[in-house]
Image 1: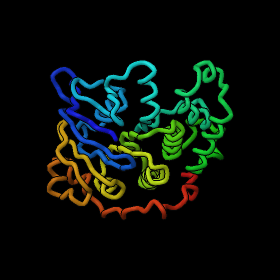
Image 2: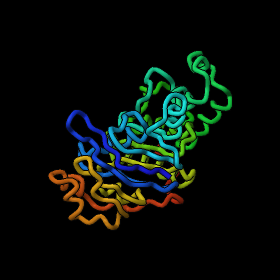
Image 3: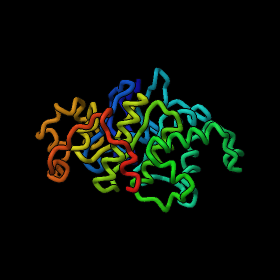
Image 4: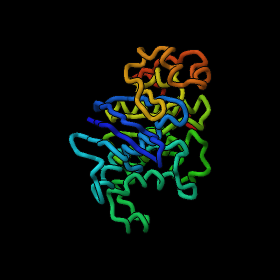
Amino acid sequence: MLVVEGLTCRFGTKAAVDNASFSVAPGSFVGVIGRSGAGKSTLLRMINRLADPSEGRILFDGVDITALRGRDLREWRARSAMIFQQFNLVGRLDVLTNVLMGRLAEIPAWRSLAQLWPEADKALAMSALEQFDMATLAAQRADQLSGGQQQRVAIARALVQEPDIILADEPIASLDPRNTRIVMDALLRINKHFGITVLCNLHSLDLARSYCDRLIGMAAGRVVFDGAPATLTDRIARELYDLEADEVMGGAPVETPDATTIPALGTAAAA
């Protein structure tokens, strides 16, 4: 279980995250919602320890993550895989090598520098690409892929880390509606099929209500809502989003997906 206790991150006098406390049960799909600047990204970066808390603790299965250093910290970052809005792929490298980067914590540095990846890791990476119908593009340069394809490669890279939790920071922010659905379906499939906990920052309330088991709402760095999607009323949503409310609440509700009936990702391979 992930436990966040009184977590605060200050930049000068401003608290990007202010005394956040919550717990996340294994196998959950939790959406973190709120307007831009609410502290969502800083929260996920602290959980992964890409940013250090000013106060508070992060516990995972009883281990104090905020106290980790050196190799223990590197191992935690492998167990808590990050997926970023801008994909963070190495464009000049091929797709397979980008996915293999998820195995860096498991092999000596000289092997990765020499591109001498263990055969077992190559097989694991190809299996991950097959999960998202990207295996046929394994030899292609990453910068030649569409946005949706690049994000699926990033998700495959996270999967080969064999993580306990995936932290997705606005993973669909730069994608069109079709690729948004493909990427969210991929995250849901990982969550339901592998039982991996997903903590996902989302701007769209329709998507958050459709895909997530639970929502954590943030405003001005503080957790101001924590509950099931059905309990998030329009009134609470408007308080969360303020001037952005009409933008994130617009449009017809998205039908709640069923992980057992999500169409094969191969049907959108060219996306």
